[in-house]
Every structure is written in C-alpha cells, then in structure tokens.
Picture 1 (spheres, rainbow, N blue to C red):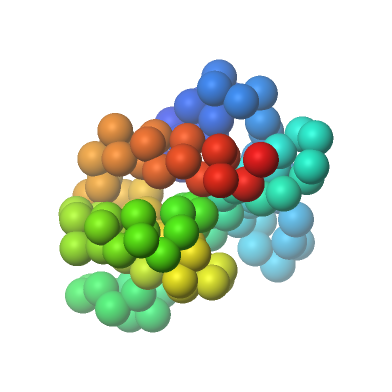
Picture 2 (tube, rainbow, N blue to C red):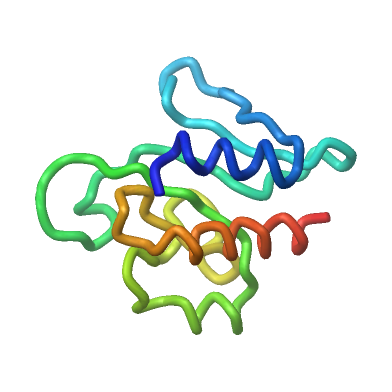
Length: 117
C-alpha cells in the first residue's frame, strides 16, 4: 500500500485527513482523531539504514500504535519493523512500499485508531 491509498482508507473509514505539520518535511503527515486530537498514525520518509533495511535511500513508513504484546506478534512479518519516531514498545512501523500486505496496513491502522480513542 502506498501513502495515497492509506489516505483514502483513513478518509473513508474515519473521516480523518492527513495533517502536514512540518515545513521541513513536506511529505510527512499525521492522522488524528477529530475529538481527542490524539495521533493514530504518522507517515514519514526514513532512511532505509535507520530501519535496519538493506539498500540505500528512503522509504515511506507509517508508525501505528499496537501495544507491546500485539506489536511483538507482527514483527518479522513482511514490511513490519520497529517504529522510527514513536515509542518502540507501543508503536510499530509499517513500510508503505508494497512489502507489507495491504490487509495488514489497514488492520494495523484500524487497531491504532481504536487504541488511541
């Protein structure tokens, strides 16, 4: 799943729009709950080497809240890594380069939404 597909899912499922908060990172954005304003997703470009991935360059990454037990069960699955910007115990990173199955991206986004309500 690419970022534009994720945006469409979140828009349809939750009525949330991406918020672009950082002028120095114009491709980075967050998804927030409308009522409590808590983040349930952060999308940013991260150097592959910082995620322990092979190859050069950057990759789009979605950080989602999962909790320590459930998060650990996803690690090791295709396209799932430790979160980059958020707490690595309670958040996971999901690569938005097609390596994580689209169903897993939606499932983890939905889980993050419910955990941050």
